[in-house]
View 1 (tube, rainbow, N blue to C red):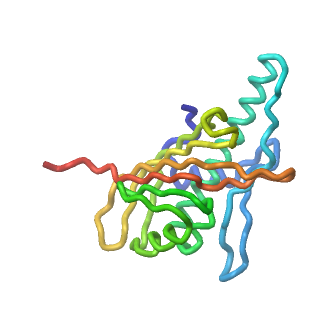
View 2 (view 1 turned 45 degrees about the vertical axis):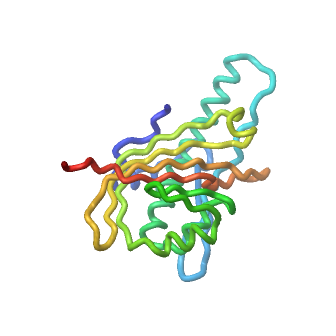
Length: 197
């Protein structure tokens, strides 16, 4: 598994936001209703997979693909947890229409059900301490460009004690000639607290 970022602190986030890449990096689209809200993770088009070519060219192409996927994952994590904590009603804009969520063993599927579920959660404060990502091989996803994103950290829901958590996302790329929009196809959240018995 390629490690993109560990110990994701506020300083890391600020350095990431100031950092410039050799190409136009991930950015977000904004909605003007009720102030600035982030709705989706947008990156430049993904590189085409070379059908033929030298192993070296294919290796360079794959490295570019992995790097771009990891940058999208970093941007996604910033957007997701900020939206969860501050603009939860907009959170389902990050999900595909038929996305699934498993939250501590409870299954939710579809945007209406996701909206209803997120409305029941108390307000939250997430702190992400680790982020990891890797592309999922296209043979496993019927040629749909997909990235596995794994996060862990702490969360405090209003009226509850702080918990450690682990969350896994499968992001799929919705590509156009000009950019790539990443959406959540699957989301699995789990508290990671040890039993104190």
